[in-house]
Image (cartoon, rainbow, N blue to C red; front, side):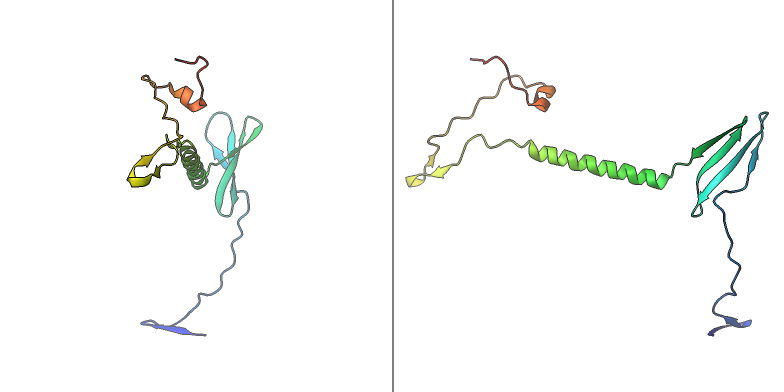
Length: 142
């Protein structure tokens, strides 16, 4: 066994073994003050309280405890899924170019032969719901 030297003398490296403390899944019964006699029995798992049994008025009810770490993890996961969904939707909504392929003709001029001219945009913007639903007009405007 290795010893550590200190001013008071040699000390063992390991502390002496202690008796293991056994903790049950149910904590001590806590009596609550009040006119109707009631009691609280905490439920423990892995050293953390996961809920409690409330004994009041001849009824027994279980009340779970919300874990803030799990709640934060769930909120972060939902936020990540929402951001990813918004990014995919934004990429999917990109419009194609207004004209097709542009080629260079002889002498350096640009050829747009066989390509329809781009459609003119209306003076009034479309409502947001029409853009979301990708709605088309029923009446052809001339």
